[in-house]
Length: 393
Image (spheres, rainbow, N blue to C red):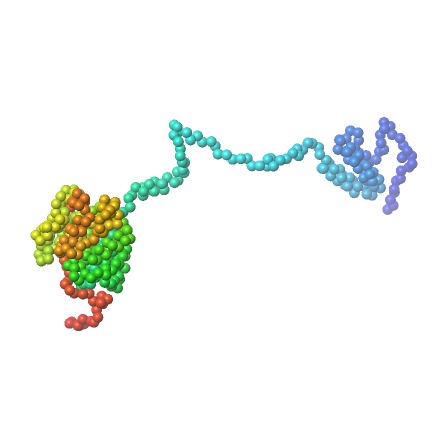
């Protein structure tokens, strides 16, 4: 098939147009005219060389479609980058800052009262518990002094007293005093009781003293004074029987307290009551049945009184700063150690406290159950088997 290409005659180029109209071509409808927008005028004036080149290529015919696409692409690109309105370029950092959050104002004026502190309600429960515990006065420490020595029932006595002290509410310290040396058997018993203890040794010879526990108690008093132990001192012999109520009553003593003790006579055929007669907590007299001891100033048993330990090492607090150290005397007759010791602590019954009020309860017993000169087996073990009387069948 032959192609026919139509050429323009020179007359066509020289044809004049009325009203100043430009030349007519298929592409003239895409060009800007006097009524076009300012952006199109700007496009034609800004790119005259490019427009002329596109127009020449457009006339070639075979590249018409490509040129049309390119032309519209350029127009769209120029229109896209051309500003058509006012853009505020004055952008500051404050325009992107987050708004400041402030708590609302709270008026804390309550009838001219000053608010010292503000706390969250969640802490009120813990504060109430703390205030409740602050109101509870801490328990006084009990300082229990026990002299002990080698004899047949020593293990029984120490174990029995240790199990009682184990049931007493702490704080409690048990000062156990042995003579000459600390035995392994006694130390083993003390460890197994579970009571806080101090194992003290008295080096003085007690063979020529009627009451062999005098030097041992003095060793404990010296230990308390040297270490300034604070609490209620109570001489608890290991052969006595005590109730738990007694140890709880001891914590009510402020200076010196006394109570009646039930004693089994040496003949073991009668009981003797020894101790104070009280009107409420005031001591007004004494129980005694032994004529040989009626000359005593105070009729009490060694386990029938207790006192504040500060009397030993803070005597100025009690008004006697220049007195000698308070100790038990070993040069007095048997049965007078208690009264001579108490005379160093108090002046008369007005400085004593009877416990419990009325002194109407027996809280400990002195039974005199010693087994003579029998000694415990070494290590508490049997050295040989007993003879079999009846064999096991």
